Image 1 (cartoon, rainbow, N blue to C red):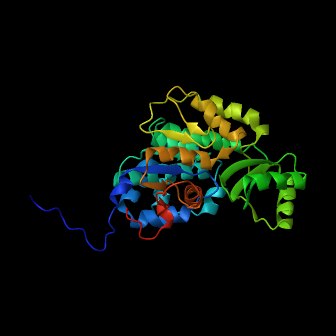
Image 2 (cartoon, rainbow, N blue to C red):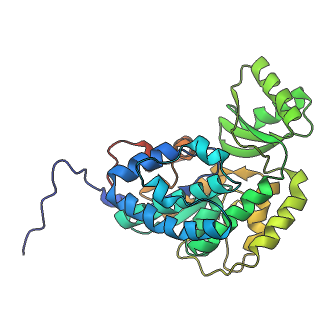
Image 3 (tube, helix red, strand yellow):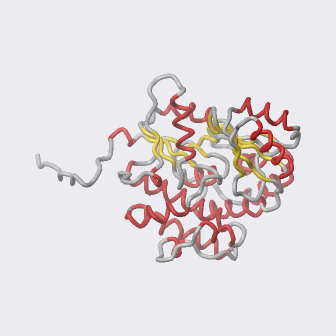
Amino acid sequence: MRAGPVPSPDVPARPAPWRRSVHLFPGQGDFSLRSLVGAARTTPGLRTAVREVFEEVDSVAAERGLPELGPRLLGPEPPSGRDLALAATGTSQLALFGASVAVHRALSEAYGVPSAAVGVSFGEIAALTAAGVFGVGDGARTAHDLAVVLASCPGGLTALTCSERSAHVLLEEAGAAEAVVAVVNDERSVVVAGPTAALVLVEKAAADRRVAAVRLRLPFSSHHPALGRAAEKFAAAVRVYPRSGARFPVHSAVAGRRYGSTEDLAARLADCLVRPAAVPPVLRQVMAYRPGVFFEAGTGSALASSARSVLAAALGPAPPVRAPLTEPGFPW
């Protein structure tokens, strides 16, 4: 039998258990354009995925009157996060959507198709697209539709370093009746949503309790029951897009379960505007697939950090959780 090629000592080995993976698709609160650009420059597989995905995303961008992204991201003078924030509505969301799908595609090429995916808030669109439920073009249209709706959702989002229970106590003490717990990331990380005036009260109460509070750099509210009209508008926009069967299971942090084959996905995606997202329950659910690794299919590491915290508190040994774009020398 002929021996296979001996890997170079400079190329990290790809652990065999990583062939059983779960991909984690984050929301909009942790998007680093710099990490995507840097990794694409040094990782041929990721660069190819970025080019291919953004060819389709840019077709939608042109259709919606937005600037192209792919050639700029891979060019000598890529845009900054500030550039995207100052661009037309939806540009940042198309960039995040395309980045997540591209990272998923590059990871799938290196380690195989995941056993399952977890979508958190905006990340559900990329997760469903990665699973083949939406084509990349319609996934990009959905991302842009949501961005347009969000632009009309006043208020903001504030991250708190505390448990969900402590957050509810803090909201009551602050007298911020219009603020709600929007996202539960783990036992020590939540996000609250509401009108700006209510968030100011929350942040002051947090400072009094010595709880870290950071206003997210997102000019809208989300996961708030007052956004019902916006949710209806978004659902109507999404309902016209065709869908296919999922190539692998997709679990929703908002629905709190795996999406079924007969799901009204337009309504479920619209739920992300009005219902809270809870990350820990769906992370525990996908452990049933016995993954060898969790990969964050995004540009940051916040969701991976929450996953480590949640899984460390669960019974039994936890698989590793990796955030490829933030890890120098990640074995692509």
